Image (cartoon, rainbow, N blue to C red; front, side, top):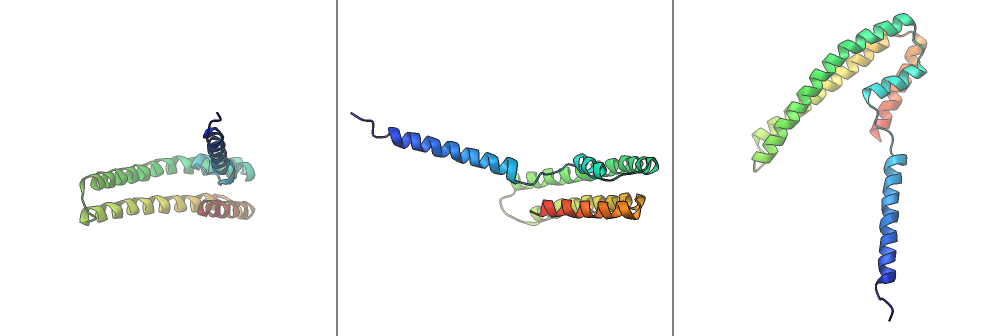
Amino acid sequence: MKPKFGPLLVTLFLVAISGAGGAWVGVRLLQPPAYTHDEFHDRLFSELPLSAAQKHLMEALEARYAIENQTHRERLAAANLALADILESEDAYGAAAEGAVENVHAAMLELQKSTIRHLYEMRDIMNADQRAIFDRYVADTLREYAH
């Protein structure tokens, strides 16, 4: 007597393996990379020749920005935690939830403004040829994030 479900189980197993493999390929190979701040700088500065004086100015700028950036990220994390607490405790969308969402957005806005100011400060250190490379690189990176 032949098993009735054997071929069906093999087919389902192969479909599951194929689906998992396809998902892995999609995530690993087809998505644009999400770059960290350090990876952004490493990629940019491998393409952007800076003088020793410019490198020194950039390092000082980076040290100052790191502190500012950390402060903004901590504020954003705290706003998200407060929102999480409200979502957990409130039964309906109301003034508390709305205020928490506004706090998250305000923290995100300040982080983004700080980052854009930092990019312009970096740009001010460069000569015209370097700025052209920098501007293209920054614009391309933002376009990658938009997809």
